[in-house]
Image (cartoon, rainbow, N blue to C red; front, top):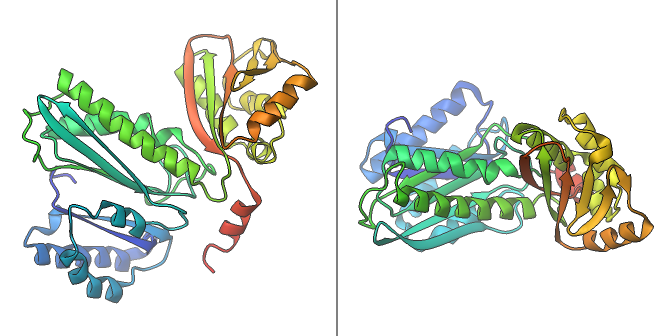
Length: 339
């Protein structure tokens, strides 16, 4: 990673190879060396991604025996198969692709990701790999990726837990033949927007596929004192177990939303707060708008996707986070994760 160049990524599912001591590190180095030799490249150009149970060693014999098969099966059409192979508790593979003209050439950006549990901002127990044929300078790609993460993977939460194994890699092979994309150019702005779109698509798939999730809810806090305080409040609401169980039960219990905003650390006047479920104003100036509005909000909460918007009327800060409900199935999945 430090060199700024890579030729291959080896990903395994089932073992995180984290908290495995010296043996885990030696196993990782051994796999890098074996794959590098097979591909006739330097081991420093081999990147690894692992996901699964923390503290579990890699099944070295199984991986080593299958490396020749993996290499022989390499294909430009293998993206979806790769997305399937890295799944753990995911219920569907996650892939996104976009094509557009940048610097007078058509470029492609494609990405895959896995993740359904231990999902929270910064980033989550997720693996994501993005490939592009664009010609782009390493600093520009790094900047575009960093900006894209803030607009995508750092805006989702399923259970509030983060992981030991977050990995997001972007690799560019330059095959598109466009003039080089560099920072602070119109081409960079185009590329950055395209990359952010791919990352957001993947992030929303991960949130939608949250363990046991039945709802995808966008929590928006607006007109907060500043962006940081809007983010604090949005995250507290999105991660509140009481709010998330209310989402599951389609219970328009707006008091839980105000409660979470209150302990978030954001400063606001409760008597000025409005709360909306999509277009239904459930709270105005800190007070409920009545049973009829709650009934309308309950109908909205039966949808698979909707938005909760909280207006502080305090400033110009705004933030949004995608979250899910907590269902009975979430408990079942995590109670039997290793069995």
